[in-house]
Image (cartoon, rainbow, N blue to C red; front, side, top):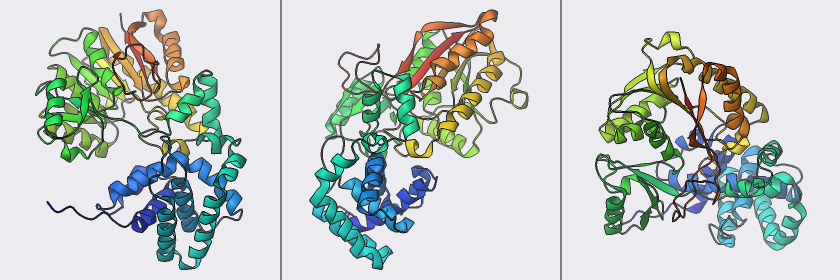
Length: 439
């Protein structure tokens, strides 16, 4: 079999610099990567993600090495190279340092020939003085923790004992966890199938499989046929929590804010439910439909703002509501390392307001005796326990009560999930779960 040659590192660095510049200008890394040629996309995503995880340190180093910032395209390339010359969470470099310097200079010659000598000089000085330079910036908050100062302070305020570990965890690459379609196979059987294909994996939950070495989904056996999907361990809690609350076959379930559809699909894989998947974004709702088609599942899809119930609700109460609310995504920074640099402190105020509006709007759509599962992929208490405490103050007099089955805040740290499997070596993303019962 002939394998395609890997793209030259200089080309990857050019495109990585473009992606870094886009994030610094306020675009998401996902959007920036969409414009990258397909053959370069995996490599650029991997490099740009590594840069995002070390961007605070790289910026502090660049300010010392070149106090006067170069033009944005050159600065983005320089920051990318500086970040990639810093050891990752596992203590390794993605490339030999001299190779990286050489290829960064080659990339500079393509994009800004006059800056190639400058880039070379800065990077070689870093190699000579790296230990002293890192010592000089290690007491700067952003450089030390690679998060904005407001984020660091919020983490310290919410989690005074674990905040350092939480910030460090965000700088590690995430595990690749799969959700096995219970209608088609079992987790153990799928692990055996992976082993037969030369891939190492193990069962880490009822339908969860940890793939030891990540790979493109197209290489997963049975993916096209709907045997398996990619879904984090913490995210796989939603469907069992709802079904464990007493939902029987045929129950009417609303999945509000459903895109990209993993939790919708998981519900339907586990039970014959009447599911309505609602989302305000038509393009993202298409992803829900595509996922359901691949898995050979069906749901009613509606495009609407969940808060405006008069525009989409037919008045028939739901037995259960799953509200996976818009949030800061502070619990999934391992997977989306650009989030920390895109969010602002004021965003939490606006997001918390939206979450409260969604809770209040959807509560009347729930039937008596029904359950609402509130979910965010956030570690911030204002989007989790504080949000639910406020909701219960508004509605508790009418009988709304918290079910202890939901775990509350799940942190992306070992031993912070009270229900983790004893043998599970992977840690799920940061989530919050609250199950509220209606009298």
